[in-house]
Image (cartoon, rainbow, N blue to C red; front, side, top):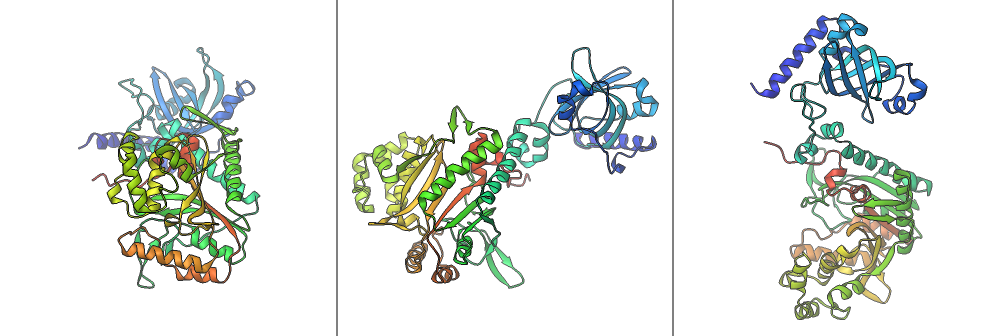
Length: 505
């Protein structure tokens, strides 16, 4: 028999004894509390000597003869409880002795201050409401008197409820993420955007360069894909003369996992008719400023060892200029893949990349756009610590963005960076159906050459464009990565309540 099972057996025996005493802890359906724990602590001066009713989980217990102390947490704050046999009576006292760390209880009593000055509840009645059959990693062990907590990362992510119970910092970060999402919604609602819902199961999963998850639709006996983006359906709504739309929803990309990537994540995308790239920059600046103030009470946010003020305008830099500044490769050098590879070899770019902690293999570069973005990733991104928009991306990697007037090799696209991390991606959207079809055809050719992340042909989306779409600005922001940046998380899993984990066995 395992140790865990033996603990469960002991605690089930306590449940049986509670029932013999006339109290079934699992039979309680409701307990009306008079205060939250935080309010009794904040209002202690007015409540001292007054009766209160509190409920929550026991985080510690300490017995001292015919008296005992415990700490009760309602998830937000903890307060000390004081039990005394003479006050509880024989049955009440035995019920208190049958309690364990992790149990949920309700208590009635008066507020008082102990000799050590701690604000406490002198308990007159205790109501067990749930018996924890597992040993939780919090408080003090009854015998060892050893403080311990939940620090194993694997356990924290796999059993998030334990993380929420035991780790106040992790709990706050996850709650801040929820408040952040709510603030994002209020921001767009206040601007007159409509929140919409678009299909998760799609025949053609487009809008991003990613591999899709595939599943089977039994009713129609056909394979469908889980969406990798929200973009193409939202732009169909713009074609339907809904001028401002946004969606916050899950997207799925069948690709690798890293500290910044999760195959299942939450995306915000918003689109506005008669707006352009510069309007999207304004929206992003306003969004960060508003959300920071709503969630943290300030536009200044501490991120690592930096303190950023989102009240300030973001820096604006051009991609090719930044690449030249960090590598020496000029826009002329990057006019074709062949020229770029020759000049990169001459400048020793592969060695420079290794020194910068990245990797570039010139022999494996297949197209100019991908090479330019690799240069951005290795040399430029780590330098973008302050909020910055990088403007102007190659056409090969931007099949949904308008071309730059006078330079058809580049597009009207920007990405936003904070502390070296990409946080958003925005376009002046293509509304020319002929141009869009040509881009899709180019992507289909790339797919035929082995690029399984190239964009598919989407005839239904092209039909919507052919019906007419006004000039439109659009932007996508990963909510999980936004939460990472604003809460200072080092790993994207810190901001996802239930990240996908490999089975333990």
